[in-house]
Length: 336
Ligand code: SF4
Ligand code: MG
Image (spheres, rainbow, N blue to C red):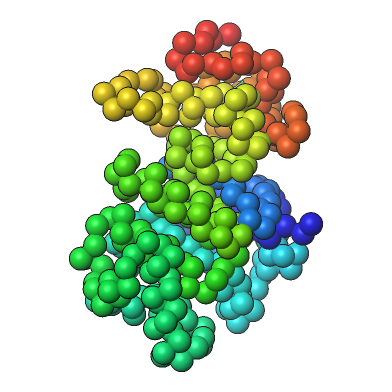
């Protein structure tokens, strides 16, 4: 079946300039550097990685809010890589977005009714009465009473505001919603409610999600498949069950061992990844992860591992994906 969304070797490179008057180019940031992925109708693909790994740039590329420097983006088989504003208009209805910070993305001067009706107004859908009816329907879908329509964003809690953000994303009955860290700013107790709401809506409307997250724990009960990103590239992708049970890339293993454990008194007790993500302007040669990889060998510093199949629907970009220990707890493996 034709995928709903298909990215093929997509790149986004930004030139970096220095100097106020004589601006000269001093480098290129490879924010997204050759990413291929597919999302089927009704599927959730989670994209996971630390900040600075290119996830948000990838989200903006998938929505065609920015144009890629290379590669191809297809929506339902149609190449939209170079489409301009007018050609992208129908796409805007099919693909919506939910942001990390619902407060920043909701206009404080607009009532909930105005916020939810706006996408319909922009796309010329319905008359005032039918839009008002749809606003009440949308509030019901996200579990908010209809009297909330007259209230303003500041009158709501963080979790309620995210529900309003979700209702707005649903207004045009999209096929895909890009969720850019939608629960990262919420209390842990509220996170599960919002994730469950997203799952219920998916079951009801056959929605597909591109779910961006900096950690693997949040997406565990949400994702059908997971793609782990490091420095602009996918380093491992697999069906969620496979990835959590048998992570093959040392970076995925590190992310899993760094995931907060449920016991709140022990949250951060386990070692996180050592060091920062290197600059995407000068990524390390060879395997980009070698500067932080506890099992790196000489070959890793020279030869870049490509993403290659290592099992059913499972791909990893590591020279030793098949042979590294089953689950290296980060920090206690021995350097070769
Ligand atoms: Fe680590 Fe080498 Fe694998 Fe890269 S290729 S993840 S440095 S073992
Ligand atoms: Mg981000």
